[in-house]
Length: 449
Image (cartoon, rainbow, N blue to C red; front, side):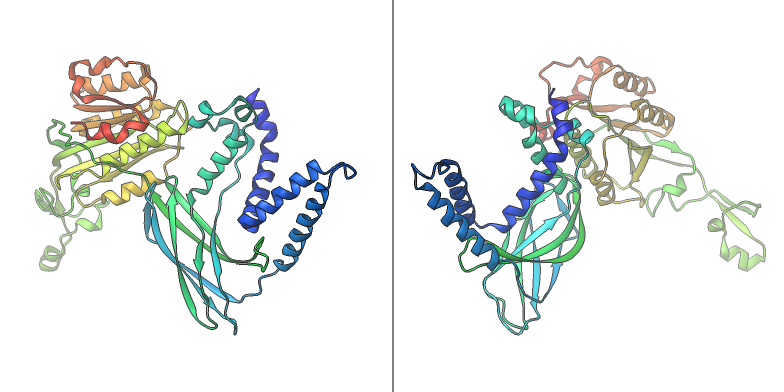
């Protein structure tokens, strides 16, 4: 029944939410109080013969009408620019500047600065599928109707809270900077749409608004936590064509021999000095490389609400940011609409690059078997593995068992918010490396050795 109500009510919720945001932007706290007084007067003053409360209603409506006429237009000519940081982190507030240049010949004071972020309206199907933990503590009416859930979903879609800034005085033909404070609510991309300049009308009930388009975007990184030192035993493995992974460390600069050029050889391996000396093309032959290579398998197939998935992404991001030696590689593997593998180490990529990838990863609609197949295909090059899983079912147990059967040392993290005790299964012989974490206790669990 709740799903049916949500599916039918989604269009109405969208309109209500849009009107609510417009009123919140237009009315001041005093205006809201007067509007509430007008509504109360309308309800209790229906019988005009036995009560004089209707006069309060008329007075309140008259004041609101005058305030509306006074706030119809904010005739300011200005140029607005925004200075955002390069990146942000989910849950970590940051400050940035909004500069307002007054192009008019008259000053304005005070001026309120408000940000508008783009939040794409969810479809009815997305709204039905959205679940929040707070629903368990709400009353039956709120859970059945679902408007509080719509508000929670839109807050996540918008992605951040930005209190209004204030410029006490904006002189004529001058620029003033307002300091804004933004708190990202989620990882991903924040899309800044516009900046609104507002000025309270003389009655102090409504604000005159002027909107300036200023489209920008900001990538919000997943939240990371300190992790206790993680040591996985594992030997250096043969990496066919390993020189492609090498930078300027380890065995990278050594080659086996020189030979004559053959059709199809890459020009990047031509020994130019030998060609200049002998007059014929000579190719450098490299030996296969041996070095440590770990796989980080991220489960992108959530079975419940989004909180566990976000915790898994934060866990993977924390593992990516762990200090690593120059001689090792880390392969981040996950499935979205297809299989992805991103490699870090030996000059191939910095941790910040993998963090940007994790900032935009979404739940997958594919099958977990795709991730398992990709992991088993690269098992011969793998020195060790770290599995971040969202469940501990037969498919995931089978993957762990297959990797261990190939002699791959593993650390398995299972994000599970239930109170059930999970059987280590194929990890029973190495139970120390089998960890079950709850979304709310992620920071404490990662710090545990």
